[in-house]
Length: 397
Image (cartoon, rainbow, N blue to C red; front, side, top):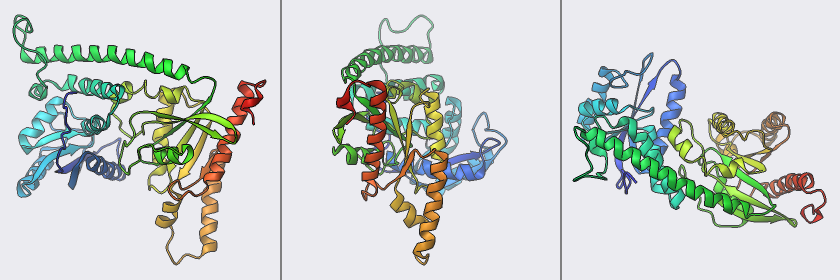
């Protein structure tokens, strides 16, 4: 990969920077900066200060205004142990170069931060190649003024054409790497496709959702397996598939990478082959962290991503997870039980209406309503078996 080790080997202190503009309100930005702080924590950095500015549109040279940049510089100078500035939106190579000259500390954007997390969490050859491809695609348009950050992959006699500059050489190196990685992924994809074909006639179910909503925990509860689950963003990168049997009804259950707002475009492109598990599934379990203050926005991000993947027409069961935390975070201790139950019933009825009854409310960690989830899932799978294999009774009972 471009960096074999994470940029955040030891915890660094960071300042976060965002912009309020005509397409992004102050309320939205504050939510995004909270998420950016969580991303930084996942990568191993601690956000000590958040800065934001209102502008009609980003400044072409420094993203934010020079006055705000000077304010950040003075804060960094006063607090000398800050090592990195993280911007919530994508920066160009020249913007990064200009900002670093003024702040005199490393400057990255949200996409670079997410790529760094993915690079740390990639374990299989496929995931590593996908992340590396996304890193090079991200880097290519930013090489001007940034070529010194590129690992020297070539050099010496025969590697530099007449009159070719260092930046042109690096661009050629990056393009060659992108080409090689794409060929490598094509081969890996062929192997993955063969493996999926070998799974036979089973109905396939995929867990999808925003990152850190509890997909892996639900996977463990339903399949009685030990899939890695952690309270950090992107705990799962590689798709994990398990054979599960409910009441003599077999099916394949897959846990997939979580979605997030402002996910780097190149990362989505690189991981489309991994998301084939979603595209080729028969049922989607859309897991929602109902205890999160912006859970409806997160649902919208997932639905938009499913539309982009052209698989939004599949049967979807929405699983509202972390109901125990929702109750704890929403209701005051003095609220009487009758009122609490009435409010919960109103919430459930609202989403039953929205999803046309295709939803369920659980707590995976507390094992609340898991039996009902199994029943709903079994009924749906049996229904699909009846449609697909009407004469194969072994799938129906």
